[in-house]
Structure formats: C-alpha cells, structure tokens
Length: 378
Ligand code: FNR
Image (tube, rainbow, N blue to C red; front, side, top):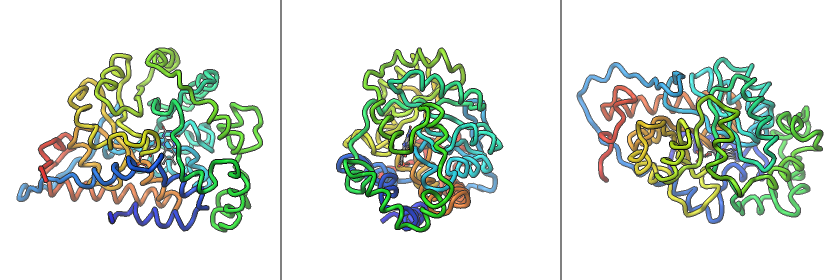
C-alpha cells in the first residue's frame, strides 16, 4: 500500500460521500488497469540520492505561460467538483490561488465561472471539451475570456466517454441510476446536509446558462453524454484559435506524434494525460509515455503531465522524466471532499514540503535542476 496524505484523504472522502459519488471519483474505465498503473509505475521510479551539497537555498518557483507558480503544480479540471463539497470549485480555486498555483475549471462545473473567477486572487485556467453543440463551446470561451481566464485547456481524449463499470454498479449511471442515487444521498447526512439534498440546492450555474432551464443534474449529464463529438480532429484547433488568442494546451496526449501535431497546429503546450485511467484502459501510464514525448517536443512547447501524481516525490519524478509542470486530479479532489478548502490547502502544503525534502536529498536546488540526472536505474 502507498502511504501518503492523499491515501488518508481518500479514506476520509469515502466516509463522507455517498458511494456513487466516491466511486465516480475513484474509478476508472473497464478493468481499471491503466488507473492502477499510473500510480504504481510512477511510485516505482527510483530517485538518485546525493549528499553533502549545502542545500540551504531552494527555489521551487516555475515560470509558465507568463505566470509565476510557487511550485510546478496546477489543479487539473475535474467535473462536478461542486458535488464533492458545497461550492467546491470556489474552495479548490481559492486554496490553489492562495498557495500560488493555477486552478483549472472544468466545462462540467457546478458553480458558474462568474462566481469562481472573482473569488480568487489570481487568474485561473479553463478546460473545454469538444461538443457537437459548437454554440455551447463558443459561449463557454466567451464567458471564460470575460472572466479573465489566462490559459485554455482543451481536452481531446473524450471523443466518446469511456465505459466506467463502477458507475453502473454504484448507481451513478445505468437504467436505475436516479432513484439509487437519491436513496444513497439521503442516507449520507454529511453530504445531504452540507452539499446537496437538505441544504440550499445547487443552482447548476454553468448548466442553466447554456441549456435554458434544466430540471437538474440528470438532464445535464444526459445532454453532455449525447454531445461528445467523435468527429473531433486537428482542424478543430484552428476553429478554437479564432476565439482564443491566449495560451492553449492540449490535454490527453500520450503519443510523441500527437505532441508534434499539437505543436504544428499552434498549441502552446500539451498535457500528457490518460484522463486518470478513465478513458482507454490499457493505454500507457503517463510516466511511461512522458519520456518519448519530451524527446519529441521539449523546448518547443510546454509539457505538463497528470494521472497518478499523489505526492511531492511524484512531482519531482515527473519533472525528471521531462515535464515542465505537473497537475493533480484525484489527490486534491479527495482532500476537498474530506475537508473542503482546508483539505486542499493542507494537501498542497504537504506536496510542497515533500518536494523540498526530495530536492535536498537529490541535490536539486531549482526546478531547472530536476532533470534526468535525478533518476537511477532500479
Ligand atoms: C476528471 N478528469 C477530467 N478532465 C477534463 O479534462 N475535464 C473534466 O471535466 C474531467 N472530469 C474528471 C472527473 C473526475 C471525477 C476525475 C477523477 C477526473 C480528468 C482529470 O483532469 C485528470 O486528467 C485526472 O484526474 C488525472 O489523474 P489522477 O491525478 O486523478 O490520477
């Protein structure tokens, strides 16, 4: 078993959430092979210990797309964040901003972007899915621009949703989903009181802005599921570029050829990601996919990576494998579900501290020092 703060937050999240929501976060696609490999492959990468180098001065700051990050970490977009804690998007965004790292707001958010952006002290990032309804996409981009979003994260690994069998078991999806979900939610006093059901109902801000007046989450998930667009192709980047002139990163790249194409179609960066093992089961873990992508495009564009990162050691490992910056998904979502804004703040502080300790013990004084020199064959 891997011992980390995120393991403890995961256990607390499991206690605090109705099980359909916990398993929606925790699960992956099909037999969850890639989900497991993301964590196991990464934690198995050996770091090279170095000693007696006077490591009193460390600098974790990172420059990315004209922003200064306190450390090479950002929060990945996670759908329905406002279902895991009341106003979850605002809480996670505030924790990230206060610690000097970017928060990425998902297309599939509960709080409206107009509520999240003014609540935080630094500009945030926004994630866009390709949907058949191009009017939805254009409207989302216009709202993101008006809200002062700096970087657009364009997710391309969801032309069809992956089959997540855990969701069918738990009642998140399938023919009897709605009544089972309501039943489970009602028997979870924490969630029912503090997030949904018995408290002030969610206004589903992003949703109602686009869909007229839906009756709730059910309509939205159904509409979204029908709207993923398998026709998505590189040409769509040109269309997006007409509406977005700021930095754009393509999320869901696992292959060096796709990274090169992303560069030639004008992307400023890629996020090496397998969607946290939620899409193509059997796809490479990201720590194994990353080195070839770094060989192909390092220096020409920014390389970000997510999937399986749980600790500060994992952050350092990904940098050593060629990433410029890392992103957290479930790690911060478990912390949010367990303890709200304080949970995300604490998790980020722990990750920073773990990085500092690991940098001292590997002899890396700056983020630029975190190269393949830090790795050793095990
Ligand atoms: C996601 N992810 C995701 N990605 C995205 O681009 N838009 C989205 O709305 C979502 N929604 C979402 C929901 C949940 C519950 C999870 C767990 C993940 C993928 C996410 O951005 C990220 O790629 C993974 O979470 C990274 O893997 P780890 O760190 O969770 O292992």
